[in-house]
Structures are given as C-alpha cells and as structure tokens.
Image 1: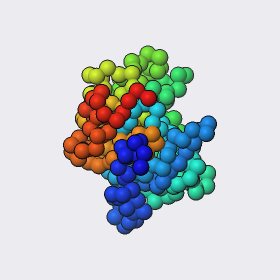
Image 2: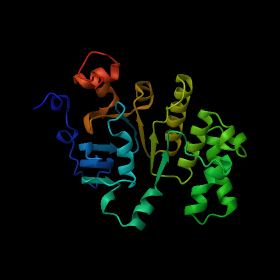
Image 3: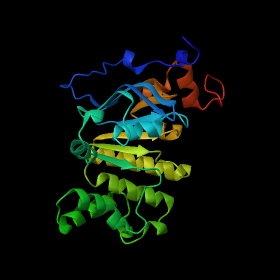
Image 4: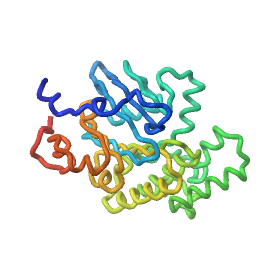
Length: 274
C-alpha cells in the first residue's frame, strides 16, 4: 500500500453498494467510478452511497473532483467505467428521453445561481415549469410565488439578477431548484462568495426547506462550518476517492488522520499544499 492509499478508508468496505432495492436507504450509489479528463484521473475508483431523505455534505479540498462528481450524477458527463445509480436507474445506461426525465426530478443550485440575466427573478424561477410542464400560467404563478416566499424573495419578483446581492442570487437559484418539487437537490458550493453570516443564513434556509419538503439534499463544499451546521451525513472526497463517509457525529470524531486534519483545519497531517 502506498502512502496515499493509506489515507483512504474505502466506503465500499463498509456499505453494500449493490444495495437492497426494497430498503430504499440509498438514493444515489456510485460504484467504482473512474473519470479521466485530459488523461488525468479525476474520479479514481470512487465508491459512495448517498442516503435518502437526508442532508448529505460532500466535502473535499479544491481540485478533488467534486464538480465532476456533480456532472456525472446528473448525466452531463458519464464515467469512463463504473456505474452511477440514481433512484434505481443506471445513469450511464439511460436513453436521452429517460435521462431528461431523471433530470426533471433533480434540482441544482449552481455556485453563482446561474440565473438568466435577461429575465426577472419571477421568470427565472418559472422557467423550468414553462419548459417541462403543461401548467397554466395561474398554476405557475402559485408555485413560483410560494417558492419565492419560501426563500424570502417575495418582494423581488420583478427585479433582474443584476440588481440582486450575491445572497439574493443564491436564494433565487434555490427557489428555481425547488420549483419542480424535485426528489433530489444538489448544491454546488452554495457558500461560494458569501461571508460567514450569509453562509450561516443560507445553511439555515437549506435546513428549513429540507424540513418542509424533504428529499435527498447533497451539499458539495469545502466549507467545514457549513458541514458542521447542516451535515447529517458526510462524505470526504480526496483525489477522486472517498476517504471516509458516515453520519456527522462519527465523522467529526473519526480516527482517520486525513479526516481529523481536514475537519479540524489543522496544518499537521497527510494533506499538504501539493
């Protein structure tokens, strides 16, 4: 075993990633996933299972494959080998119509909100409903206004994104991610660009919305404070593999030297500047 390998406690050794379809415990399973970009391994035998109806935080230093993992989960990329199973369906094996149907069950909050600059906040949130449903404008208005009220933007419906603060753009993106009532919501570095207070408030909002609507929430970040505040289940990703995964209490009391170092923010340990 190499020095790097000694830092990994493989998730597949602890969990039956093949799963039991009758238990419903796992919403997403990644099984021995490999993905190379430009010849460089980004996901390097990744094994992880994401529990259903839980806020899972996928933590890891920059450049460890977190964004590539998201793209593979929603079928914007496909693994070179291995499998990704989302709610019982193998994403790489889906036909395009079935993949599009799966994506409609997944909401994504991108780092900057990914709002359309030419549309108002209302129209940004309404966009998925207009594209993917046959709702009437009255039904769309009811759903959109409820989601904007949920995230505290009821008074901003007519504003363009250029007039929103960073935190407001995140909340508008969150409302859009929720508007299709998805089974799974993925947050890509939701705390990026926010100060600690607004980060804490956004985490409160994530918890509140999960409490109301349920579902599988996956928060991808390197922010330890966010993980500590909202993480019910935590998976630590490094160099394209899961070092360790488990409930928050277990992870924050882990004996694994890499996990201990990363979650404490210590300079001492196996993680270096390399």
